Length: 311
Image (cartoon, rainbow, N blue to C red; front, side, top):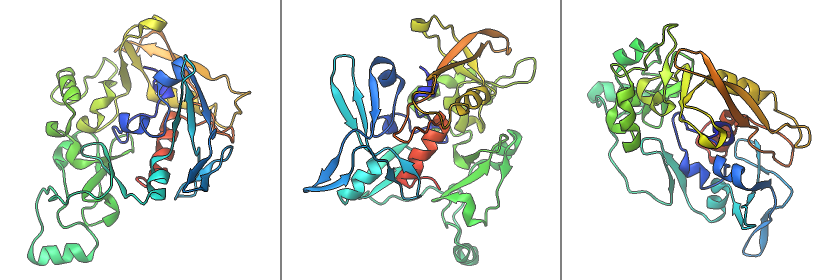
């Protein structure tokens, strides 16, 4: 799958849920045509989204108001931003990172999981600081052993809901309780655990980690070399790419108009030792009416910000 044409994981993955609501996937981009801001949207006779114009998300960022996909047979499907539509219809929206689920409507209350519930004087002290009483904490020793940096437990800013965060060795914000927690993995991802060494990514002779990015939240950081399956349509063998190279090349297309943009670029494909064995083809990810192109990571963040799920 061409990773640069799809909006990938939210700190390890919203994936399909996003693709079904308001984003491009490789399957769409490869087999048909994608247009932005094509349609007007009216509610009870009142126009709410105007064709040809971006809409403004809650955080002030401009995003497409609609995406039109035309398949190879000429069939057309409109994709709309789920937060905007849910607000127009008066439906509550939220996101459960544990189950990777976008939540629409009122949800049944459930008890929060906790590492060590606060009680008595400690509970009062914690509550006064704005820190959740029943926080979901993780294996701090394991996190540190993987190069992570712990954030203060008494800092309200280090929590997302009841989930405690930490900084991984690459400086990315991650969730504590997911590290080493096999029960938090999807069934398909559990099958990948056999590729790890003592729960960590294997290392090559240069000390570089390599493996599947689906396990990044479990391991506690993103691998240096990201595994890709073989892709026969392009005669691409199984191999690895460097995310840093993918993002760097993608950023070069930022700000280019649809006419100026080459739409595709290539980066090296490596074996697990970091030796070049081929090339990986990536795409720009599409263009909004303003002509702005984003890397997959930036597009993902922009969409999640539009949902109000990320600051």
